[in-house]
Image (cartoon, rainbow, N blue to C red; front, top):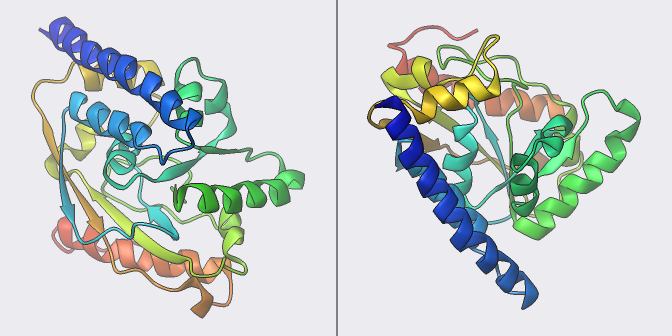
Length: 248
């Protein structure tokens, strides 16, 4: 049955690609606002088994989303339900098919090792904000199993020093509930193994996407303060979802 579920889900993904990619290039040719990356990601999240419940109101434009991170399916869920672009590590740009799909969604690829190139990365982020109106970063730098929140890494938030005019920061809390451990991608598991496990998984899973109260980054003195405020706002609902467990 696992093989059958995998085949069915991959068929949905391939069919979505065959429809959305030509339409993406057609819309791009005529310079139209392009809904097709978002459409594909929404279908991809559904195909992976995600049933999404939106809580709160996402800002439509001029927004910098800051989210906790459990799985690669986070990207399909957030991109499909908000239209956001993403910041991703440079290695993913070289992955077959995946790197190409990320570029279609205006992903900004950054190198963690290239400290000298941080100014160029900041410019890329600013350009992405102007192009897509919304961009998401996962400042933990890796995924967790949903039972904790790692310290936020602030360097890429330098794009908000000073913040572009009119930009707001909106924290996001992704809550997979009792399915968090099974859906998450942590430890030494390879990307291929995790994808196989998720795509052969029986049934669906509910994920709550909490769009939390936004704040003006211009009211904070540094990117570290912005990161700390975003993390504080995510910690509160995460702790509540875990029965009041303290989150350090």
